[in-house]
Length: 356
Ligand code: GDD
Ligand code: MG
Image (cartoon, rainbow, N blue to C red; front, side):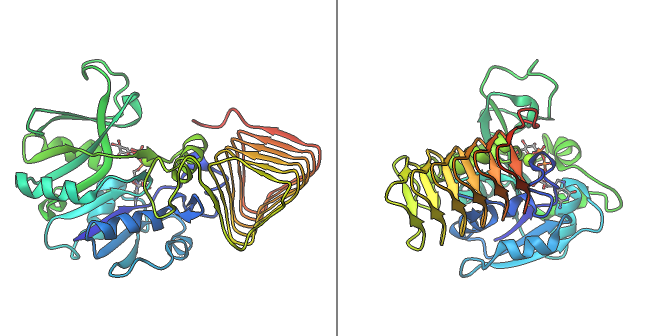
């Protein structure tokens, strides 16, 4: 089985974290998001993964790291964004000769892709969409089906829930199985959206949907990125991290002062240093080689690799970028610092106006 993973987006709502690093390689619980996705694809029997990208392709290649055994990875780069369908066509044409998986590369989950593949085969479908329940349909592609799973309507980002039935709404979870014939429906010379142009054409023509079991979250905003990290270390989703609500995932090469307090769930990466009196957690991910000074508080936050937080500082609902620095007694609330950014001493940063 082949999978095409769409990773062309610029991750604008996660800036400045995504200015020098595509969103899918940002770490979740200390591990690149795409690396967790590759684990899942390997578990579902996928042997070849084609990443379809345009934004920062070199950084993406580095961020993917070493794929799991038995999985071959290829990165296909578009000159111009082709839209979701155009990108799938560009990446898959000439490389697939049977049904293949196509995935949005910004969705964190643990549902079994194999179940979608089996449902597709059992129904003899042309295209199959994995569904997840949400309570705000306006940010997603809403799918209305009959009892047998045949899709009756696909409405991308409806302005409101009128005419869509009662909550919860089942929406496109960003995982499809597509017959190669679907590629013939995609014009080659312009941007084409699979959600707005291709799925509506397939309604009544072999488009089915299947409810996915398990954890699901779109990681587009600071809030959802932090929640995804908390869920990974807290064990709400199943990953190789082995998270749980009581997890203190401390790398053996990290140094934690005896007088520091760790409140689960917490993850502390290789070579990180936590000074005396610091409080880490709950829901804190401290990246490799990061440092937290004496009496500082880091909760519901992520420090990327090499970040430094000086003494008496507070980091809450925030992300400190790679190698970024927060000075003594400063506080960072609802904010994100990009790579290498510096916040001096005695500063108070609060960015509640960030996009949600
Ligand atoms: N290569 C490439 N080229 N990738 C693209 C392009 C493109 O032109 N446009 C979007 N992508 C990638 C994005 O990087 C992302 O991984 C995925 O395609 C979906 O695009 P988003 O921009 O994140 O869409 P969305 O989140 O607003 O909505 C989509 O995802 C929802 C689930 O999270 C839709 O598929 C909805 O129907 C769905 O419910
Ligand atoms: Mg998205």
